Image (cartoon, rainbow, N blue to C red; front, side):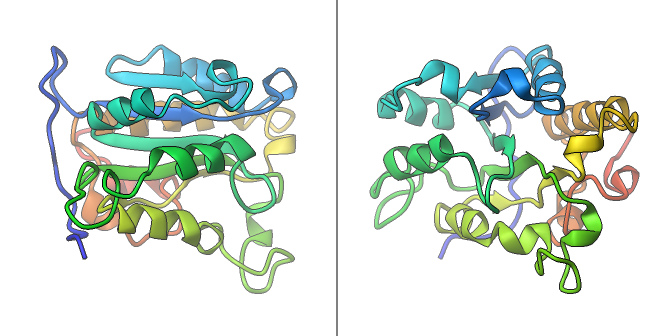
Length: 218
């Protein structure tokens, strides 16, 4: 199996630091109160590529060569989406099935994704207290994402815990969005500039709980 030790790979483009690819999936973005501001903040960041999969592939005819080239040219891969039935929206599953081919992402001789960082940035409707053994969802958010964690591991990527917004349906009314968007920008900037403590992050349930302790030079 590939090593799971964090690899601090560097991009060779004009911008020093890691290049970050955000694969964004929301099937009804016009109704989103939480994902729209997160996507807008993402699009304005230097060194970050935001791909709106539903906008680019409205008929699900995913260009595998284009998507594999995108993976090769970035060091951090993120699935950004609302949590639908404890998983991703459908197009992200289609993307995995088509793009992460045997011989490219995994299998003998494959190694295209070795050492790249992978994580989810998600919004969940339920409160954080619901995501535990005693809650009505019975599992932590990280436990529910185990299929994606194993996908990353099989592809040789370093898995980071999700950047999660709980209680997303009430986040705007409760005034939580500005702080969450600011934390999102801090995480992306720290990943780009190698200021996020990967060794401490990998074992956490979420990336943004006690975020300040993971950031260096903030």
